[in-house]
Length: 61
Image (tube, rainbow, N blue to C red; front, side):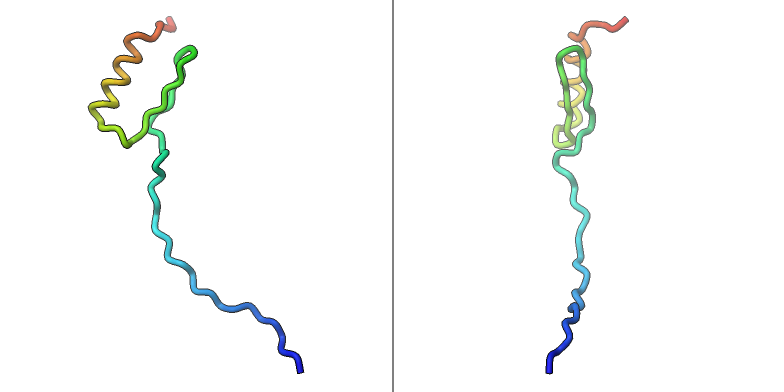
């Protein structure tokens, strides 16, 4: 006598929200330069990089 094949009940897994390490704070392109800033940088360093890039970027006016 053959037994019918039935699916097993699998308990749902408990998944935790993962932070994406590659999540971008800002992505911008100025001419040929593409700049991507990530949250792993300290706020002070992010501001310094952005200030320097915008200072030396050609104006679009």
